[in-house]
Amino acid sequence: MAALGWCSSVLRISYRGGVSVHAVRSGCQYTSLASVPQVNYVLASHSVTIQQTRNSSFFNKLTADELWKGVLADSGAASRKGRGKRTKKRQKKDLNRGQFLGEGKSGFLWPGLNTPIVKTTAAQAIGRREQSQQEQLQADIIKQRDEWDKKRNTKVKRERGWTGSSWGGVSIGSPDPGPNGETYEDFDCRVIQVKNVFNMTAKEGRKKTVSALVAIGNGNGVAGFAVGKSADRMAAFRKAKNRATHYLHFIERYNDHTIYHDITSTFKRTSIRMKKQNFGYGLRCHRAIITMCKLIGIQDMYAKVSGSVNLLNLTRALFLGLYRQDAGVESKIPWGGAQENVCPGPDEEYWKEVAQSPAGTASLPRQRCQPSLSLISVPSPQAARSVPHTAS
Image (tube, rainbow, N blue to C red; front, side):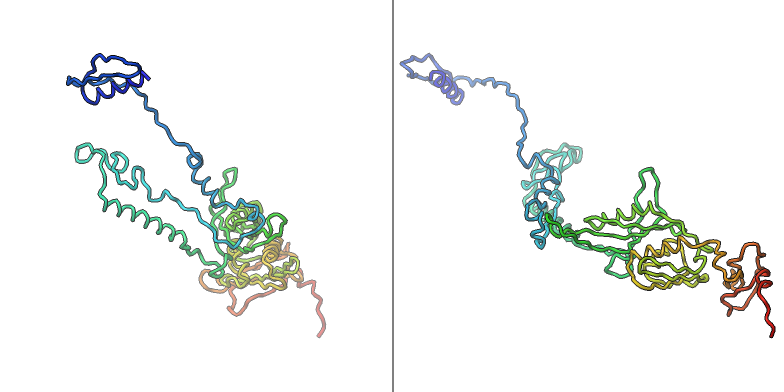
């Protein structure tokens, strides 16, 4: 009690500017406290150590990504079992967009944060923005956020494939570099098929998986294809094109523009009949075959698909037939003859060129011919002697 009274007297003296005289103590009370005008005394302040503290809470301990994950994640038992699939999907927003260090609702100007430290060779002091300017700044920030949300909803038109609304024939870039440093900049990847596969499970209900068939090639005889599966479409594309780099095939081409001979390839119930064509004929095939032929580097070919047009079986039948073609094609020549193709030369004149010839025979000389000729089979000397003559 005495200490409390002494502290109160000291505070009163410091406030009124006087000094205290000797007081007679009666019990527990001070009976007199004189206030004599004197010179003001300054009481020495005790040295206090100021320690900066930070309020730690649930929101300060987690990052923004972790907080958004808790808001957007489907962690309930019902959602894990496939309930509520038609609810509107919430999107993550970047609340830091439009915010700058030092800016706030009060509109203070902090040198070094939101205003220059030195301006016109004079150090700037802490100031405050006018109310109208502050309101305009806040309105601009809100407008910027709204424009960003609209920009995210705007779909960028991608490269057109076979049709305007499907992924078939669309290029998805080059495969990713390999683990050993190999790169595939000269390869192009094209989507052949994308489909959604649903599997009914006991815990998650109807589970969706995206299956993508992608073909890759460098346009110079090296090509391949693979299938990628994932819950996300773009992840399935990435898996498929990276996996296709492990299944590359080298396809033989005649004069780097067509196949060596006619081919008939069958896989399951899909059959493809391919015909060799002259330079400038083009690709007259199924649209998936046209896409894969461009990746391989085949420019002139005719192909007819019979039976099932399942794209996976169609791709397998095409690669199987092209990979098994015989570059020598001695067995493809009827009765030991020499097959010649008629094609225009560099001077737009038609010349006969020997495409295939049996082993041990002399090659025929290049001869000028009429444009009406398309395919000539000339017997070799050995074959001509072996053909029996019949009396007329």
